[in-house]
Length: 40
Image (cartoon, rainbow, N blue to C red; front, side, top):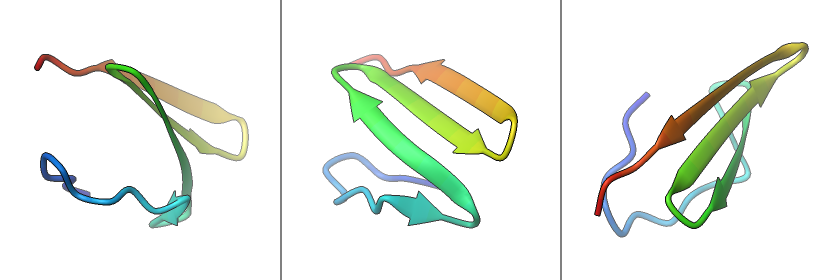
């Protein structure tokens, strides 16, 4: 999965629920959750 800068973010992608809060990207799928910090 690859997301580019300024790309509109879908609510779901490849079975993951995606949420963006400021510089944090959170991916959820069933009981798994991944969180990434994005540098500007």
